Image (cartoon, rainbow, N blue to C red):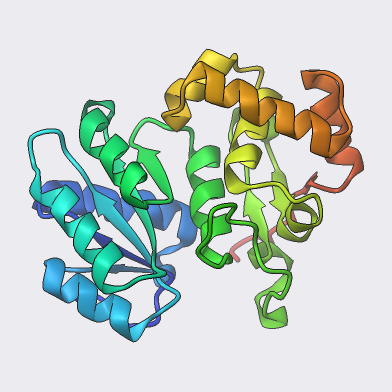
Length: 241
């Protein structure tokens, strides 16, 4: 493996070029120090066995059935590991199958960085589970930058999503992703395309958001997210930091 055994994310794709792309994608949202690259499936499983809280980020392709086989091995041999699958929109069938069999999310190459970051960073501080609600305890040494999910793209410049507020409001990672899309003025169809969800599913998540945030419409949901502390200004970084 290219890296140590304590990384947050372990990435793997049998295609060398796709593996490099996947590594760079995850590094942009988790940081290079939090990413390791597994050479093959055996290396991947060995790393996950050594790092029980690591996230497996696995590439999929429509024409490469071995990717789905790796997903199945991870789910079977390292139960409890959070598995994200990644690929283009062409990977529709294997991604749907991976999600049906226990993968926790799908990272599309063309998804907005804020949505990818929300999924990766929230999952990195979560126990594996259906709702992916982050645990309240976060190592103090990491500081405020590390206890928040950055959401700095387009409509949320210089803003972060506070994980403690997310937990308090009982919002799932997927609901936060939908809320980010709502804040950017995206339609349900736009959000669905980026998150690989149907319009009906996005509408369902939006309804849950309204209820949990005490909102009656999309604009009010975003406003209440600020008022309730879910969206907060990003910490200012020192020059050269």
